Image 1 (spheres, rainbow, N blue to C red):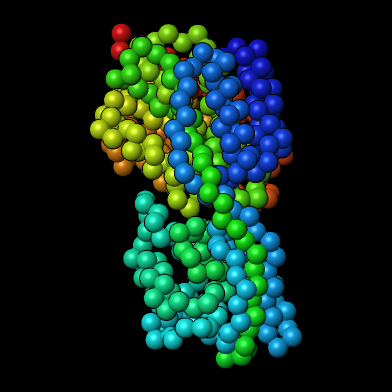
Image 2 (image 1 turned 60 degrees about the horizontal axis):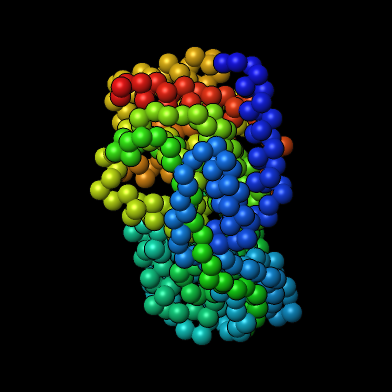
Length: 410
Ligand SMILES: [Zn+2]
């Protein structure tokens, strides 16, 4: 690799990430920052000669304010669940900690405190299409049948399913209409002592209908032979989303510049997908719909998420890649010396392609597990922890890989 190019790309990476994470407001789906980010992305890749398309969808933005929770002149600390409706309710406090207790409980006109076993993991949004365990669906439907006035969820630390948040919101679902708030388990223990007593819960929140879009850039002669390079552009509410996933978008922007003169046969499709961290995964669902019956055209898909952490190495993993493609990837990526082949993982957009039979590659940091425990989905996910040269290195390797794959079509 020419060091001129690597230096130039490293500088560009810093400029791009600074815009995405520091200049623009939060990139949650439906927000102004999200729309500014998709516009910025579209303008940038168009400047490198890509033909662009916006795939639009309806979604929801959400604003929130304070929670006031009081019993017997005691106040408790809680936050509104993301995408919850607000409320102003008074009623006796009911306490439930298992599914069996929930089945037996009468909750009409009551405020429900959930804690213990039943709140051990975040409940999947009720209409989430990709992964939705029966136990979660059962809890949601029991709650909807029993119609408590509102729900207070007391949660512990559970990094695997909620990122590094303590407490984590049990509900994060714009399709679930019982108002809810969440608090730390220790605060829940304090509140549980008031079972049966009159509780007052006031929370401010508002759902706002909006639109969002995926942005797709294309270049190359044959749309029947595609190489798809994607990353999600949205971020969790109130997080800068540097590693998750500003860096993935930066890789796409660097690659677009590297392919400014590309004239190969394979169509290169660069996709900023919008919804990986959104309860309804709207961008993912739309992308699948738009590609129904056409996933067979894809030679390879590459997804980048949580890459470029300043410590450790970039890790890539392969999913059902034919031997020649796998060999080409391994040659290109191990040549650089600092990227390694890591464990398979499934918690991001490469799953879309795997489920539709497309050979897939995922690029992340080898410290992915630790990062999703303490950093991603928190305000700590800032540009300070990014190594820009790693992003340049990924983009350069992707360009080499694309030219290699395209050469096999000649
Ligand atoms: Zn992500």
